Image (cartoon, helix red, strand yellow):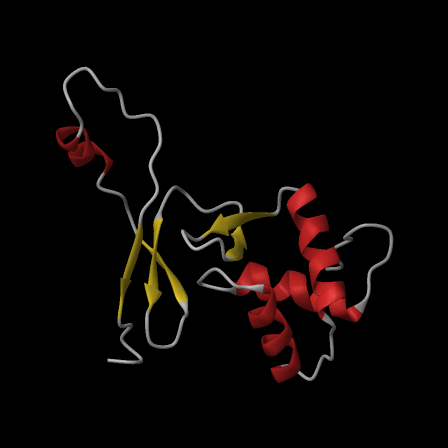
Length: 128
């Protein structure tokens, strides 16, 4: 099945789309370039940026902003969740679920929680 991103569909754009849709974790632009190379697809950062922007516009992916400003990208269809960043290898992982009901206890009286975002830091299983 061919996915159209913008006006032209190229092997490089299709690879970026496939990588993002099949990933089980958020990816950076550099991750996408590196993973494409492992699949024998040479792709430049500019093409990745254009493709990511087209996928953002199409609402197929969403941006994950890390507290340090780093931008990662993941499938838009994912339910609310949080992230874990390995301080050794730098990879960011999705965490299942959310402790939202327990968060109200942290707020002062009469404060109403509307949104929240957590990023956990530590060593991933591969680096441990």
